[in-house]
Amino acid sequence: MLLSRCLAYLTPLIMVLCSVSIGAAMAAGKQMPHSSEILYMAYSEINPDLYLMDIERGFSINLTRHHAYDGSPSWSPDGQWIAFTSDRDGGLNVFVMDAAGKNLRRLTSGTGAYDSPRWSRDGQRLVFFGRGSTQELYGINFDGSNFEQLTSDTVPVTGVLLDLGIELGAATAVPSPDRTQILLVRVEGRNWRIFLADSHRQNPRGIATIGRGYTQAPVWSPNGEHFVFVANNRLRTDLYLVTMTNEAIRQLTNTPEVESSPVWRPLSTTFNSD
Image (tube, rainbow, N blue to C red; front, side, top):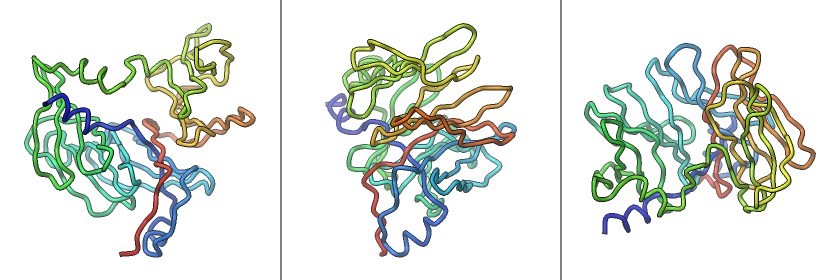
């Protein structure tokens, strides 16, 4: 029963960003453009904030603006809410806020350490890891009710992840949304590089260079027309965009801060006016 609930709770990672005109669009109940919006983390010292970038307009806005750690962002399936982890109230807890950075709520409490929240398909529940001597999965409803531990010695995390179809090698092999292409991350010479291959990992060709330091997988846009990656070049960490039609590379950030963890906003995103 516990495992079946886990299968219902977790959803594939869906990712994206808001434009600077998000407040007006929400008030008007408009459909937001979704193919160019990314949410990401950025920090200059030790405490990251969460930023929204509209790639087409070239704007970024800081959603959290807090001296605490704010990280591990995840979009709700409808693109209206963001789950993340923060230590602003003691411990590392799971919070949610709307796409404009408002209506902040803490879902978990205490001095524990919870990380990497993910949404259920209906957006009504979140599942996340608890840090400690063992990595266990926990779940909680969107309204903060029904907090429970989902894995244990008899229901291991690895087994749950495999049953959910989460690829353990996803950091080095990332399939496109339609599963026709795969991004492979490999070492070439002294640098990590991104290669594009077919669905069978055949005929790979080099697309982009990440640099000598590699920690994060590239991220496809929901429509498969682009992907974003984090590169460590010239002692800097920035975000880059690759457009698949011509495989052109565009640098998205050029700041002293460290940018990381880009996530695309889901395709089906409509804001209501009420």
